[in-house]
Length: 318
Image 1 (cartoon, rainbow, N blue to C red):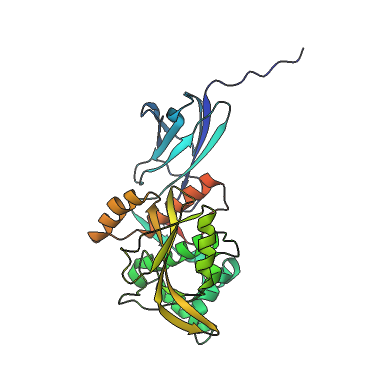
Image 2 (image 1 turned 120 degrees about the vertical axis):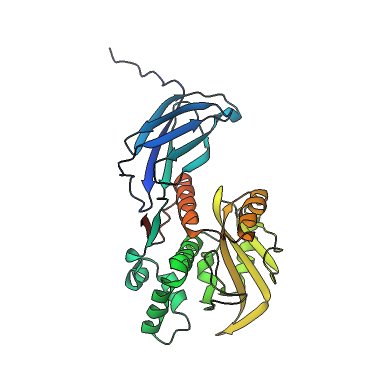
């Protein structure tokens, strides 16, 4: 007589831990994983030697108690976590987390000019816009690696990669940006948390449509001097793209009367968290860190089940 499968009690979650190279964590230090339910009760807190750990029998409450938090820690690494993870009976919830070394460095070896053209032709074309020739474009791209310890280049790759993953009614936001503003001083300077450029004004109508579809919301412009409107992606809990426009600043590119655009990525989706935490931190001289954005956006994308966030560079131990 055939055996009858018995449903597993409680919920399940597979926690997989990766490092800054987006490969499974392989350091000798064990991983401390803390599992907390929505009632703020610690369900599990223990060390694990494998980058992949299955948790079973997680209590299910059929209420907000099912919104679990998973946090991974390891000696020499910054903590990483995700919440909420909705736990349900007989469902394995994947939770992919990224641990970055506390002492780290950007590895731009995978992000050569040629590799950029092969993997991200839109980004390469944007960087090349206005350059005298391909050699000049490649040179100014390479120069970014040496500015501000590589943080400006990491920011540029983070934001353009994220913009290209957004689906507007027609194309992606990156399709509408026609040129970058190559300044390193002043109000339009490239920085570790944003860049400025010139965009086809048709992008504004596309974002208005995306707002009606619940993919973007209006964002305050008070924190962006000279801005006239701003839109914030709300797909993820963290590391959403914000697109801010300075419509009084225009530049003719071909037949287009382009508008000045200011893209950035916030740590937090909740505007209160953004104002109280990220902006307060920035006010004291610590701008949004592209390394944190890299990890948060990768984790958020993994949780959402979209193609991997791959800005070409990686983060390695210093």
